[in-house]
Length: 320
Image (cartoon, rainbow, N blue to C red):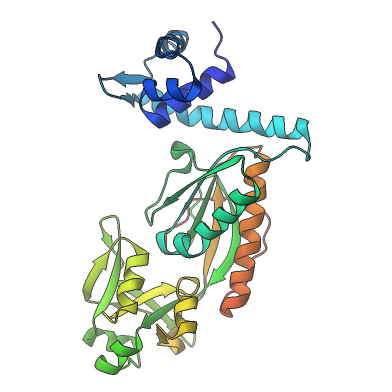
């Protein structure tokens, strides 16, 4: 037997759902048919793709490799179909997006809602996480990340540059005083983000071209950037954020920027995608929407400048 595209899509759906009975209901195929097609595919490939239990399925190592490799194949086929159909056909299919918690909740999620409303045959799956995601293994189409890029072969487009700032609620500053220089942070309550097992407790500053790194003493720690901002708004202490994350809070007076004379250079904000030659039209359309949105954010922030660079090969970015 040959492994048809529909068989590959069926295998991928089984991996996503984890239960053949659920896929059978979704596809209106009998469980016996689903099981037979899975068995035939494994026999054709000569490997076991799934570990079976009475309740669910899980991927084997060979299964994970198959899913990662087939992602590109399915994507390129969909891109070819898009090209043949031309621009008149409605956008349809799944788009997976990942973004940091705070940035994603405030700016990406509302945009995705609008995009899906404009293209009702598109399904958008948003993963909000401050952790690094393996885009190929997770089947992610677009990721928004910030920071420097390492060489890895992923494609990246610079969306904007945004300044890191230290912020606090007015009530906290009235109570604890305003730091005048980075060393003053030693006597303040600091709210720190954790990235995996690493505390982001070294805050970088720059003045007159001279860098300065200060290690702060955490009072509150969280792996979710949205929560660190909420603690700051509640008056729990000082925290460091990128400007686009706090622009609305600053405008509304919920947060105040401090140590602005010591601001470090802007950080790049990147739109990253897997290294595939062809891109489905739905993904390209969402990419354009994101570029436009962040251009407006950068202009409105007043502290960012859009990169406007063309798509280029780059690496996996460091998370904010």
